[in-house]
Image (cartoon, rainbow, N blue to C red; front, top):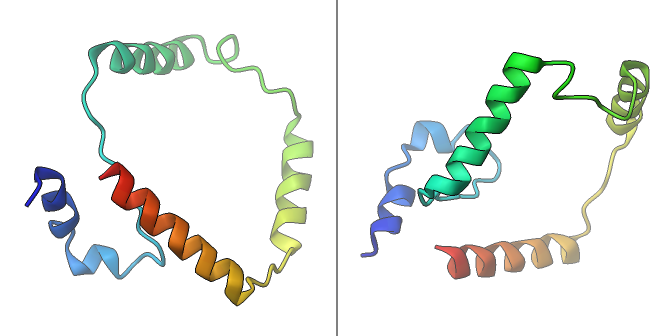
Length: 95
């Protein structure tokens, strides 16, 4: 058994039952990447408005969310099968 398989097995059923879809992602430690991510969060926290300047207004965001909530997409069986196949191959490739 690969060490990464233990992450998947270690998820308790109580947690898994709360989600329709679980996609396991494993974070391999990388000092450089971790430093850049931490620096970004630090900058956002300290500088707030300077660090984050969205290109859209709050009103535009609320409008977008309202429209998105009004949509009732219907997933066709063939799309569900394709998504399942892609997810399985992706998980197998990256685990």
